[in-house]
Length: 102
Image 1 (tube, rainbow, N blue to C red):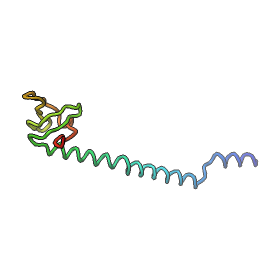
Image 2: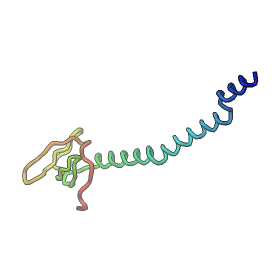
Image 3: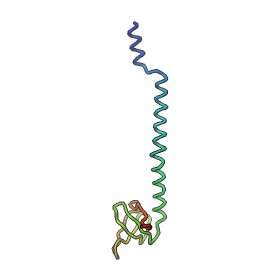
Image 4: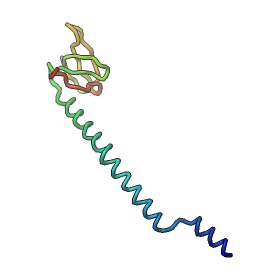
């Protein structure tokens, strides 16, 4: 009988360890949110504001690495002038960087 109670106690988790497990899980999630999710949301918000503030003549870089100047802006896309009179129509979501400083 003594051996059976020892096995049952070993198999059942202690109350303290279960509470500490949940505390650790909450702490891990909080740290992940603080250092990963929150900064990424901030960066996405800044990029969306940049895309909405585009105006004709802005120098930009697309996600594919194409350098150009904004020529025309519509709701979903932007027409950019890349070389001479060569124009490309690109989706607004593919614009990733402002190139006016360069």
